[in-house]
Image (tube, rainbow, N blue to C red):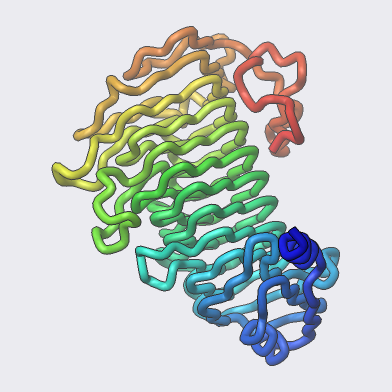
Length: 384
């Protein structure tokens, strides 16, 4: 009993804080960090290109890398990746700015092992910007990371073919309260989950011109990069809820996914498609894109922009998808009825003005008395 009490008290005690003010000090602190250590970065600029293998905290005693003063966050500038963590466990990054990386702004992976994932990684209050700019360059790239949380982060201006957050073979994670803005071009995305990713939720996030597909649920992954190997799907059991998506060619794409729910979101002026159902990974080992649910959303579109509300590609199983209780509102022809949908919609509504306060200025908060309710983001917590 006494031994257990000592262990509990030791875990509850705060660990040491190592305050650094320059790049050399930061590298030294990272090399010597032990479970429970907080590395506090003073305001200023630090060299990017930090590569840190095997950073391991413990349950209840994470290694924390954070701003000494969150009101004046340090800037980690440049490098192939601003920071690359290989095989971290029980690690938190808070209130940092990463900008100007040529590859990925923040890269966290399992060290290429595949069998031993990185895990218990928390990213909170980060700003990642000006990555690339050309090619498949991601704001935040997570590969083989389990039990992760990304909270209150802003990612803007990532690579033309990359993603704001790219998940490859990641599991049991949450992305909440984040903003993705002005990144990705044709072939780019806001958030992408592929390569065997599963049990991932995206909640209360905002996407503004976030690539070709704001939300790419699934994707196309080279065989060696799946985690686990040969799962039979690109992604499984994904949830997107209470989000706001402004622009993008497609608000959401279901791509080789086996089970995904998109609900209580706003899609404002999608450029061509509200949603797409696609299959990009070929072979008998892959299930067709199936078991998607698109419910209780508000799609506010212009008649001269939304060409095909629902785009269905070959090799998919659209009959397994559910559409229900969505509001389809044409902003330039408010009295317009339901658009032609290539899937049956249960209890869909048209001609219902959501009464956005000021959409031209980006204010898409849904008033409590909006006639579009209960579709759209729910009132619990601040609206994105």
